[in-house]
Length: 154
Image (cartoon, rainbow, N blue to C red):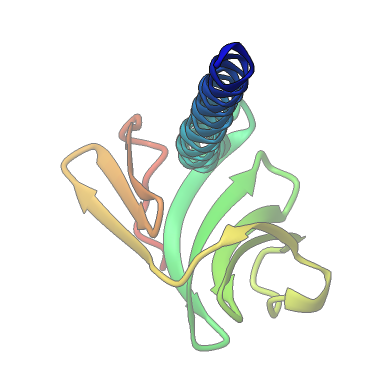
């Protein structure tokens, strides 16, 4: 009888240990999944803020003397003059990417050599009083600009 009770106690102890190990493994998997979701959301939020901040910084750069929207080569382009140099940063969508190139004012776009800012399909520019609103897939950026910065390009 004593041997039978020892054997039952052994099975009971193994069962309890297996339950603790199983519970621990489930807790680890749940924690890792939750952590991965949190990191993914933080990365997405960081990327959104990064793109919108880049656009706002480009518009407010010290050398940006004139900012306007223009259609170049059939694309809607945000043109940001670089001082009185005769050159400008041009931001536009090319093949599903928001890109920026630097070229002579009035020249054709150079999408092959443009820098990719982000993957993006939507790029809209609106003027509301002295507020320039740029809409992208990442969201909207609103920049309060001086009267002499936003000009209708002639």
